[in-house]
Length: 87
Image (cartoon, rainbow, N blue to C red; front, top):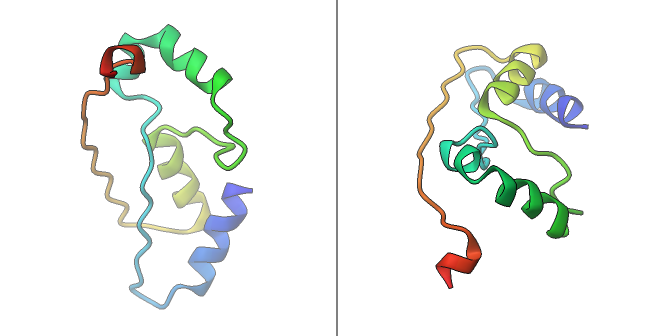
């Protein structure tokens, strides 16, 4: 339960503490460009240890709901070609 995890993180952090979250942005431009590939990737890859796919704005809303403020989101785009092209 991602929301429960964030609430607990907020509870145990010291005042002025920080939390860093790194994720692959599901709203990235290259995923929109290769929509079919991205959709198939989710179906084919065993995601048993990554059950959730979030966009940055979704994470921001969950952080706010958990009580965090002064939220800073930084996005670093990189281009990842479909695996068939990379190899």
